[in-house]
Image (tube, rainbow, N blue to C red):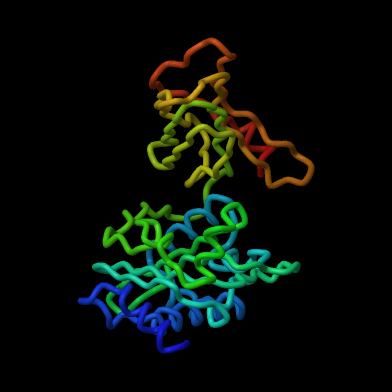
Length: 288
C-alpha cells in the first residue's frame, strides 16, 4: 500500500476509532475465510458473529440439514481480500465495515473484473467477528468503476458503505430441525407483502416474485399465515398470490401446495388477514 493511499484510508476512518484498522479487519475476515475453506467448524464459530450463527442454524434446521456441516456446502470460494485494495474502512459503536476494490474472485472461473466487496463486522466480548458481506457489481456503472480506479472515492461516501452503529436485531433461535420443510411464495407486482408464519417466521416481499424458506417450518395440525398487503408508491399493482408449499424429503415427491390466496388483475386483496392450513398425517406420510 502506498503512503498516499494509506493517508486517504486513515482519513476515511472516524477519528475516535482509528484503532480499528484495515489490517485488523482484513485479518479477521481472512481467518474466517480460512475456516470456511478448511471446513473447520470450531474456527468458524470463533470468527463468526453470534447473530450470523443463529441465522445459519435457523435456516439449515428449517431445511432439515445439519448444522454446522451445511455452512460449508456453498459452491463458491469467498474472495481473498489480500489481493484487493481497502478503499473505505469505518467503525461506529460495535459495528465496522470494510470496502475493498479490485478483481473480486469467487473461484467460479472466467475473468473477474474490478468491483466492490463490502464486509461487515460486529464487535463481541472477545473481539471483532465476521458478520456479513455484499458483492457490488460495477458493470452497470462503468464511469464509477473508472473513478475508483483513478482514486476518486466520492461514490463510497454513502450510508451503504459505512458502519451504522446500529446492531441488527438478533433473530429468535429455533430449538431443533423443523418438523416439515416449508416455503412461502409471493407474487406481488406493485405491492409490499409482509408475512408471519406460525407467529415465528417473518418475511417481507416488495414488488417481486419470490420464495423464502419458512424458519421453523410447518408442523402437524393447524398452521397459520398472517399477512399484510399495501400498494407501493408509484407501483402498478396487478395479479397477486400468496402460497405456502411443503417440501418432501422423499425422492420424486413433488411439493404440496398447502394454502393459496390469489387475485387476478383488477381485484384488490384485503389489507391484512390470516390464512390457515392443516398438515394431516396423510400429508406428512408424503413428506417424510
